Image (cartoon, rainbow, N blue to C red; front, side):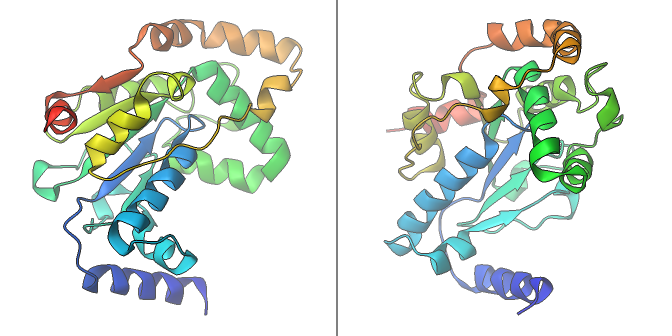
Length: 238
């Protein structure tokens, strides 16, 4: 079965399998724990809907929405995006988990991914993040728009948004807040060290740290968990 047919079958099944669980969007500035959270939510959603975790069930509850304006969100499905929230409205009844982290670490991770996955992965990642520059400029300026991602998602008030800082996921009560926010139990995996942390970038590393110094300081000063009023109401509900 080719990819387009698999996608058609999956979305057809999503449309005919009823669920009263809200769609969940995992948004991210990139390389900040979004895949980790996305996978944990997929497992939790599968268990909540079907009572067991299987490959087949997992396919029905996971999807991507790289362009939010073109996405149709279905109950009981977890979506991943790096887009900006321009077109999201309260009428879509979605819940958003926004993952963010230290920008210089995220940029360093992208450099590692260029070595590990190749330039095709980099080009796709830059497209998903609506980059305003090239890979060769990543040490010179915020081409992946980490600052814009932080501004847009943390300022959103019209829909529930729960922001989670990657560096504090395992010690801040994030798992409990996340579970209450989405309405089903979520279990985070054990933390693993980033492979990119051990990379010796030489002069490029020094340049990268200077470039992202202000953004790093901003993120370091942000709370571990950020919940707007709509998200806080869900987390605090009895």
